[in-house]
Length: 209
Image (cartoon, rainbow, N blue to C red; front, side, top):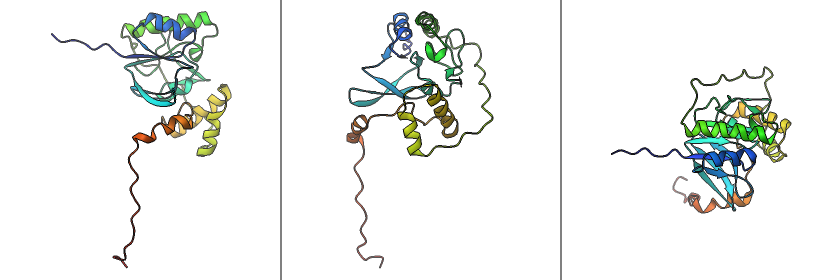
């Protein structure tokens, strides 16, 4: 008799929306501050920083309840005016990726909770929506590409609508490799142990002279 694996659902955010979603999805994995921070996302994998280390958290479905539009943009979700484009059940244009709370336009904790419960129930039912959502047209004015130092300085700024608009414009230029949140040097240093050993430099012994 064959068995079907239970989808791995990850919730980002520990506010009213995140807590409501976890209640509706008791088997989900919760990524929330201060224990952990999601700083980048790619299909099927969420990069997380916490406890002085960085790890990849796999997921089959993702529900973003934190105000992190850059995480959703990194996955290819449409974002308009700093808010992700989603339907009434939190479904974005990317199958298996949903949003609720402030990032989806909620202005009160009660609205955020209702959105999260609706999105959680849709994910639990395996619903991805009948058709992908339409991505809004890109802005006509072409933004200038920031150099790496300027981009790093931008990501160090406190979260806000102006920072998000500028970062999303860079995302449109650079693609989905732009990190959604800077990572501490301590966390990056934890990865040194897994790096390959450096290759010693070649020395000219006069053979080619």
